[in-house]
Amino acid sequence: MPEASTLPALSPNPVRGRLNSAFFALTAGYTDRRLAGHKRRILPGTGGVVAEIGAGNGPNLRYLPPGATVHAIEPNPYFHRRLARTAAVRGVDLTIHPVPGETIDLEDASVDAVICTWVLCSVHDPARVLREVRRILRPGGRFAFIEHVAAPPGTVRRVQRLVRRPWRWAFEGCRTDRDTAAAVRAAGFASVEITEFRFRSGFVPVRTQIAGVAVR
Ligand SMILES: C[S@@+](CC[C@H](N)C(=O)[O-])C[C@H]1O[C@@H](n2cnc3c(N)ncnc32)[C@H](O)[C@@H]1O
Figure 1 (cartoon, protein in one colour):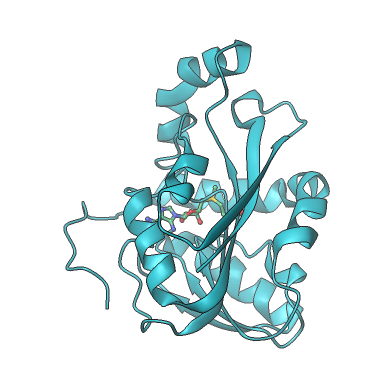
Figure 2: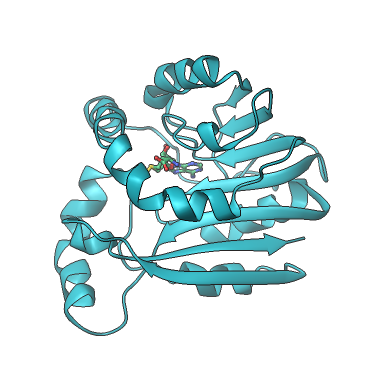
């Protein structure tokens, strides 16, 4: 079971929480066109039980097989209404767990796959979330992720540094400068495969991204 909680209280701002959900709903088509190829490649296409950390409004549910069983670990209640609606439209059997990824209320080795997109940038403690991912995955289960990450030294990295405070405020804790590839590689998975890619858009701070699969 999860470690006893020593996390700071997670209390999404009512205004920014709603604005974030609306922002990601409005931009879903735009981001999906840029991420679809990576999502099709890494997200689980077969049945089984899936846990999604930070499911947001549910933009990944369309990539799962119809009838999939999904446990959404989503601590921000302002995403829940859109998330439930997306699941109903996609025919996904959804249970929402309003808990952070650092303390997931699922049993050890109870899911076949864990997925997350653009979440490890925002969690309070990425190493602890990754320990939870390994704990709930069955042996041989896959963790599929897409994350924006710190750019190498250069213009994008300078922009990431410049905007990091207002960005973190506006997007409820999102860091532009995390080395998530290193965090996943250090998390003790049996294998890790990561592809680096550019997210071609006007959102320069999230231009450098990774898509990967880690196997427990
Ligand atoms: C940028 S949004 C991405 C949402 C969705 N995955 C997507 O691709 O559109 C970040 C998500 O991470 C969630 N989140 C933030 N902190 C979290 C935590 N500690 N545990 C789990 N989810 C968290 C937020 O509530 C939000 O849904």
